Image (tube, rainbow, N blue to C red; front, side, top):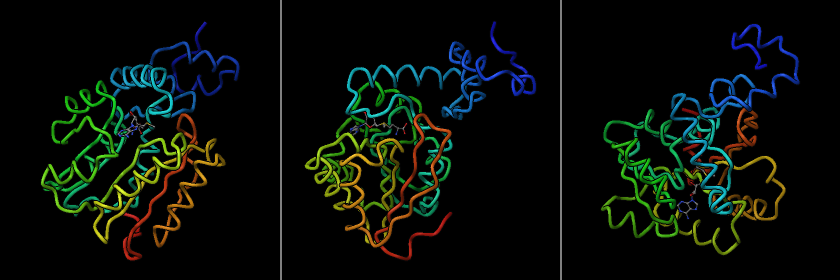
Length: 246
Ligand SMILES: C[S@@+](CC[C@H](N)C(=O)[O-])C[C@H]1O[C@@H](n2cnc3c(N)ncnc32)[C@H](O)[C@@H]1O
């Protein structure tokens, strides 16, 4: 028998029964189980995103780098310190199914130009349908400078990364960081997230060392436990003055 759907009774359901929530294809049940699955996109949409994400991960695990889209909590933590309201241009790398995109859209100003790059063609098509205000490019972030030049944008205020840095080799990390630095304004910010379990991987350590060497400061958020898997956000301003919370 499935656990009762009433919130109060659910809280008193024995631990073993709670596991049955995984048998229910309903976002609310995942949320009650204690994993915020990015339900801000809405029930049906969120469940579809999970399947689509998982399918992408099974096809290309190293490129997708996650089994589920970021939760709304993680997405908010990622952009919490970004100065989005006054930004002229904002870029998101590896937008996936739009978990962070949605939060960025809610915070940018009416004149902000928002460009999202996504390598997976299915996800890119979904993003373009779902967020008509966003300029979606189904291209690699490795071509970021060329893309920004082609679109005729000036330097970028904020680059928000959803890229799986932990599953990249050093060369790729280097190339991508050079692209990011090549488009950022001197007052720009670079932010993103990493998964807790990957914090001690060599590739993550290399990436964090690179961030510390490149940026004058780096803020790391508390762990967002309500994400699958638990994660933390980082924010790196290029100049010291741009590090306050919104
Ligand atoms: C960990 S997922 C994050 C997705 C989404 N931002 C989120 O938080 O739910 C990484 C995403 O980056 C995309 N990606 C990986 N390498 C990329 C690249 N070089 N250029 C653009 N997108 C890339 C993958 O296709 C995948 O959608």
